Image (tube, rainbow, N blue to C red; front, side, top):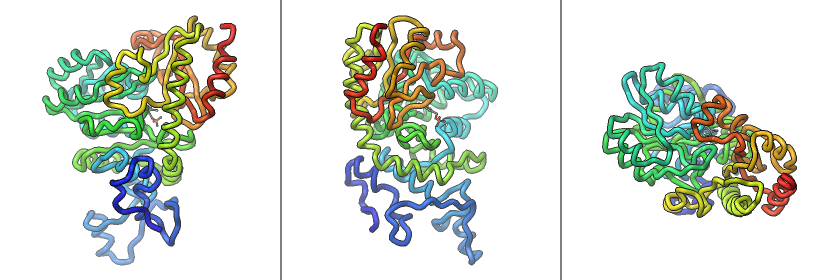
Length: 397
Ligand SMILES: *Cc1c(COP(=O)(O)O)cnc(C)c1O
């Protein structure tokens, strides 16, 4: 059976299952095959040339395109309501290829201080070496960001909610400011997922994901993806096909498989995280909880406007210091202590060993990341089991 052709009419829950697959269901198979082939052969040289020149659909070499990768790209593209999509070996390959494809010496990037640690390294270490000026602003001072954009901006790079303190950026407002000066607006949507937020609909030109997180959802495959207009995605695709950070077909298959349950997982994670955030907020050992779904969150109103759900990610500051974190985290029975997030199992870690391992203690302090902060990626376990686990771990602190 083929997947429904007019996939657009269905909800995202249904699209997560069916979208992008129909062209690749061979010989009646109900699942997309792993096309583990470097190249694709043609008996007729005319046909080979037509495919190579893009005059006819087909594949030539898997660094360029591959059927399993294409099914994955189509699924995310449809969920993000993009015109085109292209995939990468990792989320950081998506970030770096997007930036390097568009930027040249003398250009200017405006972004925020709270981007993912690896992205921040590209801004502070690699782009300046290329002669690109980068201005990193206070993440939630939207007026200051607008002023900076007006000084000239080729790429406005946003990420929301941010890692690890879950700040929320008003995409619509800043995208408007970016477009007024002709900037390309890029948004990292990894934390929200296309189920909770669609940056393209809010004015972003490109939306990108680390698929290694919620999209795959099982912590077993690295990948990245961007969606946007045909014109912009084509430029990034061209950079990636030449420089080579292609997704592996087996990883694409795992990501496709994981995405079948994307809506189910996110629905559960949204609900559990909100309940846990409320519970933590009332706990005497906790100083502060960062979660966009809490009324106490400074950008709660922005989050309500641009997100359909508040996601599975939160962080909290313990009363105490890094030693307190070192005592409490090993007591958790239902959490991997690992540098990852967005999986079916709950994952915890301090920024010092996870998102901001590349940064020094001073750099983290300058970014407003306290040493007693814990990042909590809510899994799909029973929420009362998770709360009970936190309760026993925090007892007596
Ligand atoms: C993990 C992550 C990345 C990088 O993705 P990789 O797949 O690990 O390369 C980028 N942005 C955000 C928000 C992330 O969480």
